[in-house]
Every structure is written in C-alpha cells, then in structure tokens.
Length: 102
Image 1 (tube, rainbow, N blue to C red):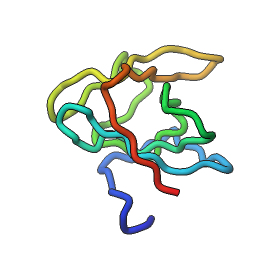
Image 2: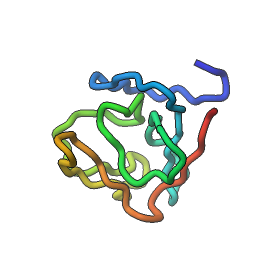
Image 3: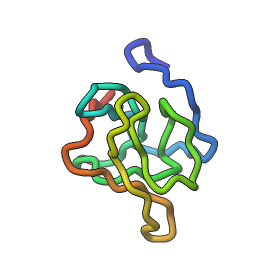
C-alpha cells in the first residue's frame, strides 16, 4: 500500500478487487476520525457502500450490523439495506467526508 494511504486495523473478509477502481477514505464529518477505506468506481459522489468493496475499517466488519456508527463519537453515518441482491450501506447525507487516492 502507498505511504499516504492510512492503514485501518480491521480488514474485510468479504472484499473483492474491482477493475478500474480507486481507493477512497471515508471519515466522520463530526470528529474527523478515519472510518472506512472503500474501493470506488466511477465519477459520481459516494451514495452507498457496498459490503464487498470495503477494503478495511476502523471497526469490525460483518454483514449483520443494521447500521454503521463512528467508533469515536457514536454518530450514525450509514444504514443497511439490500439493493439488487447485495448488502449495501446507504450513507446519511452530510455525515461523512471523503478523500480519493488516484
């Protein structure tokens, strides 16, 4: 991994590598804690997190959690749903900041 990309403690067991994608760091908007390293594809904004594209996180990742909360301040930043047969976490608007690594 590159030196400027932070190393988060929990790796995702469901992770699958995707072609033409780049890593994106998702952090809490309130306390600025690094939450998730996500593999993003395409040009648009980050609306939902697909479980198999999460690279690593600052909290344990399992497909059973109904929501994702910041481990530092406890703020809710995503809710779990099924979308097109896959587990997705839809991000609450304004709850996260993103930073791309090309």
